[in-house]
Length: 260
Image (cartoon, rainbow, N blue to C red; front, side, top):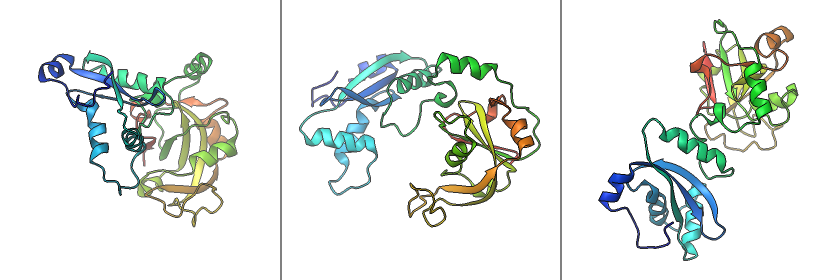
């Protein structure tokens, strides 16, 4: 751990020896890990440097930098921990992802590599996931697959609809070409819907959505309905169907287009 405010970077010989590493940023006020990242050289120190460069008048900072500014303004210093070093290029993404998964509530804006498909899951859910039938590979219809967090509402069609319809950074030109929108949780299709229209996701177009804002901020949402029973059976079945096509599996991007 580094409590020394004069440590602004690694000596060259140290940076060379440690190679790829995964690190944690810790709040000294409560010992909480609030950010996980990967890098080499002096990457671990870049966030504090960025926070120092921010002007007092700067607004709308990302949560990570806001947290660092609060720490610095109290005369304290972020604690930098190199969690694992000398990691191969092939493994560094997996190590980072596993650490991100281990610390819920981080200021990271993106989940770890592969976390949506391979992240923490109860063993019973894991068995259930891989015991489920697989979605057919040669689908001719246009689909939009959207990764959602359905929580406990895996079998409530209306609840799934409300989660999958709003609001996404999606290409409306491609989305309107799709015949169906599929809701996906950890690689399993749990819902199938028909999107009648895609609109900017603002409070004017969606007054019924409590958390809709006046500015869509580049996001879109749809009005639609649950797919017919035969379509639901085909894509979802009784307890969901696994997405087997590798290019359709979700990683960092929650949106996948299939023939759209």
